[in-house]
Length: 296
Image (tube, rainbow, N blue to C red; front, top):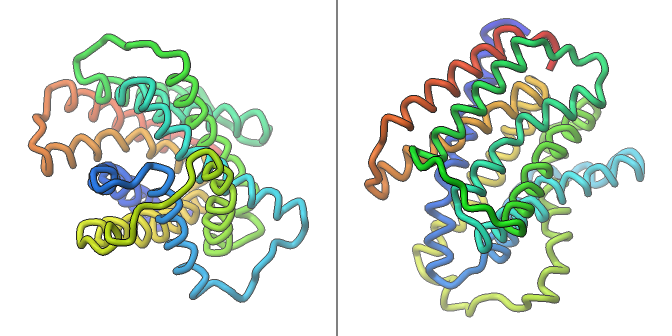
């Protein structure tokens, strides 16, 4: 992999995380207009699946039932279970706790890759770089409030989301060697929508049709479905296939930075010295991890 290609892959991963860091605004607008987190997830993934199907429909199934099962697991770990556990966690614990736990997934992705791929030479410098980025992410999320309000149920749900994304990254590394990013992404959306349907047995129904006629609802659903889901999942899966699970997933540490910057620009929240310090640690840690990574 030459330096120019490597830069492009990292740039795409960075831009993808930047978009994901702003999705909280659209989600908040939709929730204010009466949509639940599960409904938002279902609609955004359904929109993304229909769009993906329009230009990626020649191949409907994987080569084997085993691979089809892996695609279903991708839809669960990167879709239904991940989003449900993350959103439900915030009903029991603080946003700070949720962000801190969920954004620690690169550490677990690194450990999983090392466990399942003995050839993955994760050296000491890479591990230290990942730990430095993790510390920086914690500083950004806590933002000077070094007190965590523990909630066993909420924190367990957040940890479930964290492990889901780490497993998703590992599974992506496995299937990206045999299938295109477009095919995998379409499968993620399909199985994400399919596996969320049992939730509606507990919480049935969708909002009234007049809600979907509001410009704010239409615009934010299209943003989440077209850009944040279809385009971003496609680019993220492509980046994992090119960079590997460890290098790509390290960009998750950057997510709180983009969220805080979006909050500053859109909601007028103040940028603090803790944010700047944490951002510096994240960038330094990612630089170390990338510079000395042998195999990702």
